[in-house]
Image (tube, rainbow, N blue to C red; front, side, top):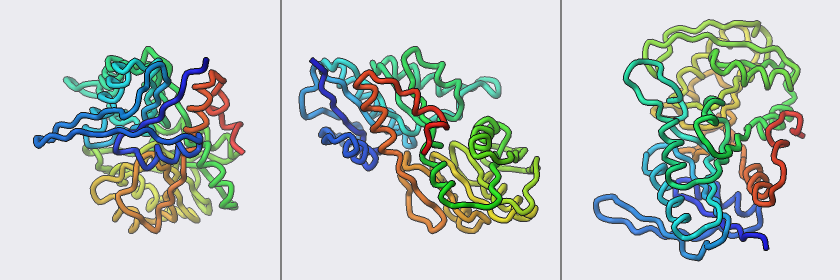
Length: 314
């Protein structure tokens, strides 16, 4: 007898979880919250999950309560005798802290992996991790989806005559190279120097941008400082237009104002994180059906390798 599927969401990702459940053809499970006056809260499932496969959808962007809520829901599902508990984390927060880049700092993404496993999660489904090595922080299966599956068809629909892919920094060169190879374009790389976190001091463009329609690709846009710096520099250097495909729209501080004042024609993002407000320059693409297909395949014990290849994009 096949185990029943239950789909739940934390409060920060309910907008996306409802779409995922709709794509699967199921109702999103009800979670109630007891909230105490000091800010403490307690989630509770309002139906039995005994013997079922539980998928909990929650991105772990700020505040840290989003991560805590996910951990509590995983623990609750295990204590309610679920057969398997799987976390769908569209945006895996703290992924930029994936190594020691100076003395006496934590490797926070490894700490998060340890917390998730300690809570009892048995599988992770996520999208566009900041670095591939984070998969190795887990001793459980990690399904690492690529947003190129939804970005590339949008780019192809634009019919840009002189398309060229660019990476806003050297760290994203591998991602940029994958896009460039599939789209059969040149690759441009930006070399940046920072004076401190989130502040770019200097940038150099490596490659030809004259007369080109540039597509900057990256996993996270936070303050948008690097992105808008690169877009402005490329237009000044002779680019015909500059767009960006960036999976996770963290967009903190005055990022919206920077984007709207910049040389960017369009910023294309996924709905892994909800926008704080709409912007005429920001286009949001829906990743819900991709997550739904993977959840369905995982439950049915089918191969999901096709979701990790550029060649599957239609």
